[in-house]
Length: 337
Image (cartoon, rainbow, N blue to C red; front, side, top):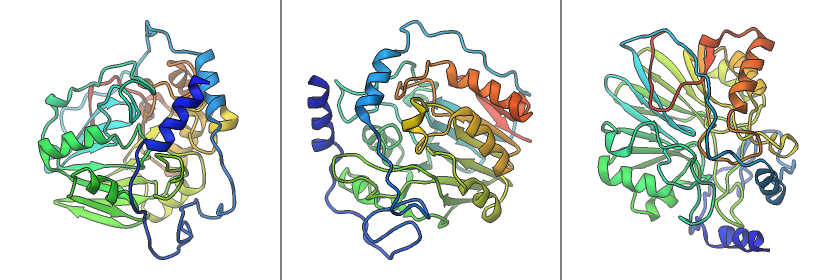
């Protein structure tokens, strides 16, 4: 009963905003809600109680297991990448510092006292961040759009925030004014970078009645003669092939590999490692890094299982470890291929 009370509170008073996106009807917007092309009448539902029960039956250990990370070529120049935690990535070129889906809060939740708590500290502390020029937000779920972090970034760095359609009003209502919202395939130029908002197969929701009232997606970043792809949060679908056809092959990709069990519930929303490797191949990505794992327990698989399953998937598809890997939080890596 306590769980249902918490859940009701969570959806009724969390993340509320006044007003939603209004714009022309498209192949993924019906005038009121967004959907994946070709799936307008297809219903996906997350059974929160089932996921919650699975998490309670398979809690992550307080003493975290040892996880083996890849031994990678050591570069000292190029585009610098630091995996901060979860889906948060710091990416630095000579002219622009990007921060993607930043979350520094202790919980991926609107409450300090309830919701998924972090199991690891960020790989780079907030006070150690360089000046952030651009913040990219893939969608409005609490583990990707963390308002306390965004407000702190706004106060400290005054960066440009790039968000999907419908999310600008939420940031504006929280004192963040330098916001650009994009539809799929739209672009924004910043200094020597071109940021393209790309499709994903996911959803959006922050409270009870706003499901899919805002858009979600991924990002393609062209900077320093490289194409970098940030998948955000996505299930497996045909958009990876479409991105390759319309935007091109990435030199480097950030692809989610965690939060995928129970599979029968989470398949429409999250890749598992096997699907992540298939996505890497369909994108034609030169190399990819796994994100969206190991920080917040949001599903039933053990904390180390995404890395174990990724290794098995690489072997299945004959992909070398240097071509799809995970790195330790806070460890710099240079995209110089």
